[in-house]
Image (cartoon, rainbow, N blue to C red; front, side, top):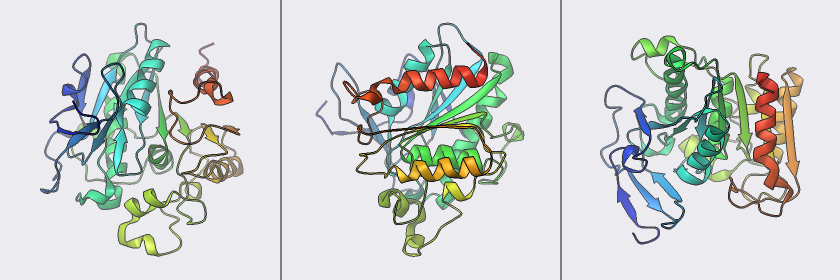
Length: 304
């Protein structure tokens, strides 16, 4: 396959044949006719780096642990609300956490700017549905708690899910929607938080807000304005030299959580840039971030 070539796919099962793949919706989700769901391979035969675009059929890849600890993690990769960094922020994270005992679900979600029927709420609808699907199977799989981790724009979506889990983002479909969409814990990795033009990621803002992006304030999409005492405890990681999403986003989230007396661990390191995931940290302080996350999860859930 040529690097950056576009390859159509029907299901993530074609990309991950060794794992179970779960569709989010029982019926067609009214995908716009102009979309052609595909992936772009930016890696090589040794290590995938696949990017999902124009998603019409959102799914989750289940990555099971060798020995389960009773904790599930919904993983939401980033991509500026135009694409999904499936391997670098999704599968890499899942395989690392699964090795430690966590039952992992990697989410592909639809984009708000692609013309879907639920418009700006489309990605939130997919995230809520994913969390409810995980909870609907929790008893059968021995899952006691469900966390969410999001990267970049996926961090915005994880934060949105963690603050507006009770927002009716879509019409009820079936009995799965009787389950709560609230995560028990939230981890935000170089997240987009605010829609304030002074600190936001303008690309994500434009995709999320569409024609409304010209208006200056959007508290309904700024995660820091939606934090309440019911927001889950949070782990936040950011690099101070992030050229895409200013670290002020994480500071705003930390301050909002602190103001509402929600437990929060904030890690801001000097170097790391943006989009490092598990791959671009060698020799930097931020190289230890997966260990920090693991320790935080264990401490919060009493696993150690």
